[in-house]
Image (cartoon, rainbow, N blue to C red; front, side):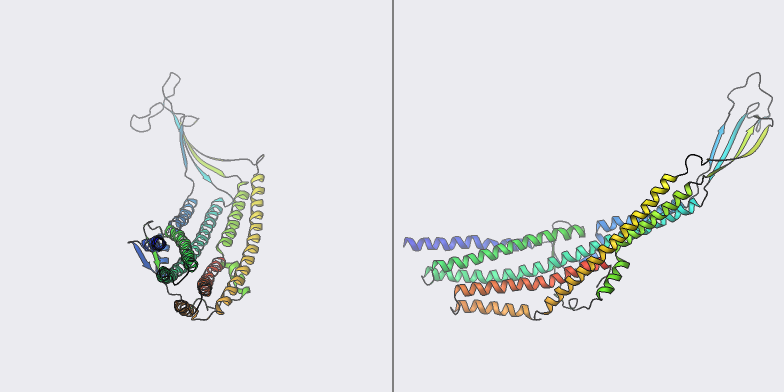
Length: 433
């Protein structure tokens, strides 16, 4: 009797530690759960992502710099030689008007800077090139964030699907464990067999916990991209469509050519090279001095009462001919030219690798039956039924169960990998296949 009492305690203790797991999983689905599909979520992402909104301001800033570059320098006005008092040597001078400024002198001058060698046009061209660089930087960042967003959605979608399947399997094994605990209390099965089944339950629970942690991490990444509050729980409702899995990609050569034309990071470096070329043109123009033209007025400060004269001034390029800055700008152009070539090689190699990896992933999926998942579910149910009927031993049951469980995970991973690799290839090539 004492032994049977301890058996009851053991059974209830195991249920005590296993049952709370289900409530933990249910707690993940909060009251502010948002059920949404990926396309709708992507629209929210494009409208609300803070990095995209911030990067767009760089283009607006570039427009402002272009506007400023088009403005002529302001003229300079100066007044000097203002006579503060009258002494005995002062000459008789009529007032300016009325009785104002009688017997006093002053001089005034207005000057205008005239930029030579087309410096103003070259500065405008530089700012336009900066705007193109800002656009290419924005496009590259947008494509990068879209790839990250779509990959995170794929991770979340298939993790949630796999966790839902694991919960169903766990429910089945949990019910099987409760039935076997009754059989154990009746002395129909051994304690070893019961413990093996409990070990299977704990293994599934550990896998579910790990998967829940992965989902939580992916949720955090997505909510950051969406700019959504942390209390939101995203539940993706997409159906697992095979349309994009069977889509025909361009040939490898075509994909490399497209990438070399449309890759955002490469385009940004090319625009940077054009910016540096514009800066070189400005530095070359800077060796030609600008001219200051002026018009001056002097009242009673010279042989004439009202003297009006013109002036012109410019630097003599005797010591500083801007050679150092010109050489530095030339080296900067050469440096960016090397960076462009290096980026072209890097992109070509990455496109080839990702194109091959993607096609291998597609070939792997094509070797799987279309109704593979439903067959796995049917077989899993049949294995549990046969074990209940004692047509299978516990070792055979666990072996079959683990095999089907791993196959289900591999099936989801095969589809997910196609999405991940396709989005990486889309980012590299600047496409949207």
